[in-house]
Image (tube, rainbow, N blue to C red; front, side, top):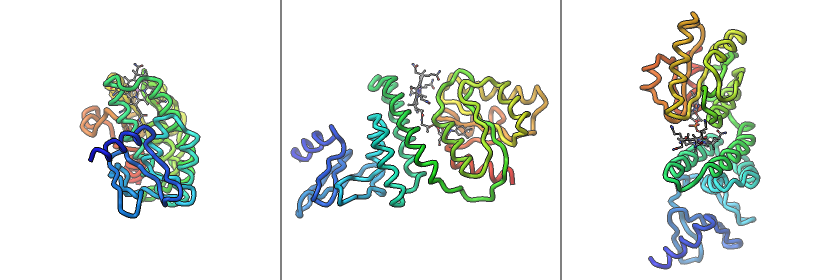
Length: 269
Ligand code: B12
């Protein structure tokens, strides 16, 4: 047990340890086992099911590796690896889910002062670089599409835009015309744009408990300005929930971008 512990400790430093010519690579984020024929291992990492091996180059192609590259801010390496992984058949959605989960873990570490703002920034940049590759490989979610315009943005006071960007990319991949207002968007700005673009949906992202009320403020303004019912109001972001969406009178809440595309398609008929 001790030598496994030491070995794990050593490898955690780099997380992935290529064993060229041994027929694979080691990922020891959680466990490593030595088998009698030498140097093969197994990992219980969160994406164990999608770990692939590129035996010739001795490079491990797993979502776990991409997650690590993202938090290391090594966007270039991650982009190259992700390109290969999607070509080998790994679903873009699975990669995106893994990266989103990793960002959540990073957020928890940030709260505990284990990582700092620059760590979040470099990981965020790498995430968006990876999205540049994934967006070309997304397949539409099930359900008939309709050419409709969706106005999206992150609410006032909130500069988090990765999740909102992903929602935009996935909606585009599903045939929607997306008008992206960026982040730190005033409630009135969404309304003006929805009117100008004759939008069918307005999507508001909020990543902080302190900015979530911006979604409620928007819905109140929609009623005050006589726009209620003219477009669907869709809310999301990590601190939001279906209960929150119901409470403020939003039409749609979704956990992620794919669910959002599916729900909107269904509601627009
Ligand atoms: C990366 C990050 C940053 C980056 C943002 C980079 C960028 N360009 O966006 C930087 C470093 C700039 C940053 C800054 C800050 N951050 Co920050 N950040 C994060 C972190 C780690 C990840 C967010 C992320 O990108 N996740 C990945 C994406 C893909 O997931 P997502 O956004 O949830 O999106 C998915 C779903 O939620 C959904 N979705 C999202 N939007 C929408 C919209 C619609 C319409 C729908 C349907 C669905 C939907 O679909 C998406 C994809 O499937 C979070 C932790 C967390 N758990 O969220 C903290 C976090 C949000 N940040 C936090 C804080 C405190 C800050 C700062 C105030 C720190 C500071 N002291 O300055 C500033 C805020 C500045 C501001 N005013 O906005 C706190 C917020 C706490 C709170 N009050 O609620 C968090 C929760 C970290 C923590 N645990 O403390 N941050």
